[in-house]
Length: 166
Length: 168
Image: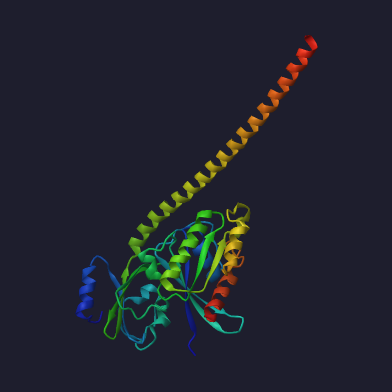
């Protein structure tokens, strides 16, 4: 890896637990000045100094330049790899640092999957309970009507009986 | 001549089918198995417009959420337009979709978008009625019923947004 400016080196050290997969130094026009690390692990081959960075790193389209540090967490460029991307402004351009986030991603994915599945099940349960509640209300209403009809029939029969026997 | 590139974000609540729509559009594939997206997945696709021009779409499939967080806001930077995805079978995703649209408008300003009512293959289970759709249409929104499963209106949705982005 080529020598990095002190401030960038310091920045990387401040988030030490993460492994730098690749870095890119980009000028103010969005062209690649220098790069290092293993961008091929992100499926990026054939990087050339001087080329527009968005040709290889599509995700930077519309992103540059930045005035403050921009962090894009869990950015997946291909099936196998996931990175935390940090874009750091420099006087005449910016540095893009890509930190390996694969293992963290797997853990996070499993957790989020369980949470979302639980939320879906909960929603389905509530929908079913609501449907059950509606049916119960309909049944109650129907029972009320039937009781009313039966009462009227009984009253009518009682009336007939009274007339017949008295 | 350099190819025109535009960034599009897929926005919507979790499990509405954003990843499936991208999968259908980019790879013509679909899986019934639900796999939660974490962070953001980037895909690209070249699209031929009706006027014969080509456009390269950079698709940002953002993890589902019912609100815009700081993390999500950073993903939206530089977007030229977005697809607002709703699950027709879950009414709350419609409500969160409307809220998300307002939040995105505050963050990015007026950007072209298309609202997708996904899971059109399960129309008999929809919890969204014609009146709700009509209300949004009257506000000038473009709504499309889509199905990542059958492919219904998927190409059309991306094409519609591409054309809207080029108009602005």
